[in-house]
Image (cartoon, rainbow, N blue to C red; front, top):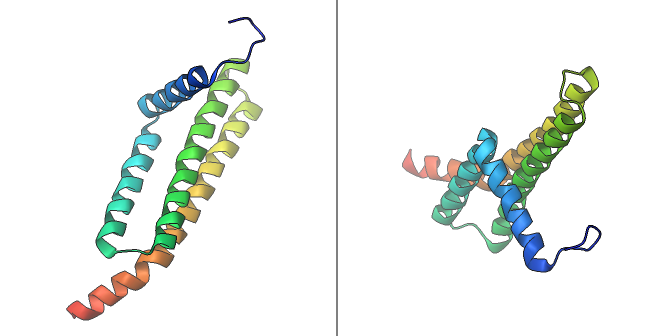
Length: 127
């Protein structure tokens, strides 16, 4: 493939797979987010959430995982451009991490809105 040719669909898909694999193998937070998201989906199945709630949960989990992947990409680029300690490079990484935190907080709020009433109802039936 020439330098300026666009890669085909399958080549692009393979590059994306490699990027996700790199993020999975190098970022502990990625593993945590995937495991936590899978756990939330299992709990959603147990509680019998509505189709709309499924969609919102999947969207929230996807936002967190997507933010983590973008954070990893930004960290790689910052390290490439500025391999030595630099205050602005560190700040860029902090801001990207902040974007992950925003997505996590949003996902937690979604989870509370969906699951808290069910948990309260479950506890009130038990007591």
